[in-house]
Length: 300
Length: 300
Image 1 (cartoon, rainbow over the protein chains, first blue to last red):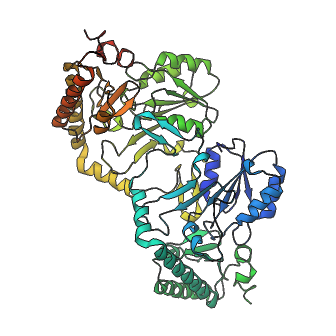
Image 2: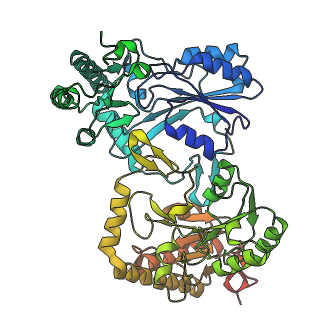
Image 3: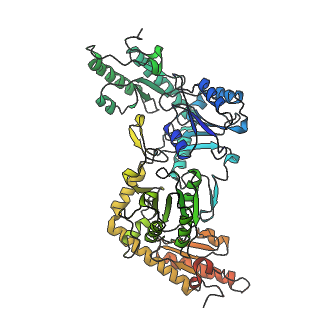
């Protein structure tokens, strides 16, 4: 916002809530863009809204893995859309929010390629997710020249350059990040990512075989499924919910045994919820697509 | 800012740099007010600026201990000034920045009385200073009713109300705070505060007796003195500097022995810097007052 003070923020509606919080706090105009079933941004709508606001620079939040569905915005298509709408590279700023997927995509053969060779200006990655830091922390990468004077300040009495939003930071966080990276190493992370991807597919297949609506995006570790009916079950498994959906993020500590136990419990409970036929499982066609929906109408 | 969207931020020039950073980030108009020699806000200038901007609400940052001099703004006078300038209680917001002194002033007989019975709306206190948390953290106190909808949001998929600026927080921080409070207790903190106040006076007197310019505000643990001449000395003692000044924050771990060693080292070095009379000690009359200045002109 400091680089493009009158820029409009474009973010898909499935972006992390902090994006919209930031737009309110920083007094930025914000255009919310619709999403596809995968959770990724709808570039047709993005194009329309960019076209309507050609006179103002564009600040685009690109989700490399949305919070709930793990949908990955099509970075190359977004860049193409910006260029085709007449935005020169100095009139747009792309931030890639790769909180979860930032440590997955480098290990994917066909995953999204994030690189500063493309006209992106910053990438953020969490370190308390796949890397396992016990405190919330992460890394924001940007080019030094992109840090404006408005955001960096030489503070004499601490004898350092402050380039942060919140000032004093936790000194343990970088040590945890360093430790996580050193202990796991590139090959350790690669192995973990492969394990997560395999287990996520295993869970998705388990849902499907049990006749439960479920979706797993390409190269994602987030399995979306129907919202369980009882609060007790939700609380027991500490499930995260969104409207008619729930999801499981298949992290490295999750074993096949855990997935089996979870699925068995769900299947048993569904027998109680839906067994007598009085209540029907929710239709999730709109949320995760007809092919992933196992409601009475779409089950075949 | 969300409660008073067109409010003007008033803060003394000796406020923490994060205040001015916030005003830039949040796109708030900011009026910087001059200070007295103690570091406290100049209420005469505050009155003038308030009077000139009577049409807009006032958001006032009150320093309960400034960063460099430990100066305490006169809260009661600030409230009186606001009222006399015609600001009704719903047209001003007072935040008390008590980062360091928030854990000192409760134990002072004649210290500033912070209370929500006065028309203040928030108080912040650091927990990584006197309380000793090993990670930067603190507490912001406000009335629940003052948290606007713009700043709090019920986020379904984390099943909680987000009232923070930066979202996910360190879960260890509240444990450290709880531990610090439980271990020290009210009487332990009181003893520590008394020790710090006594040691700060001891250091101030040491400076004075050695003919070195120095200032210690009433009920403060921050001793301001002349900026040492050599980088080596500054680095060795890890001194914090501001223009012609340096300061020592006399924290609970600081012993009389440490203060003696520091003062001895400074006196020996000053002999090298100023002993041959070629270089004179700096005049600090403007910074800390004529009575605290020990330069050649003001030493008597």
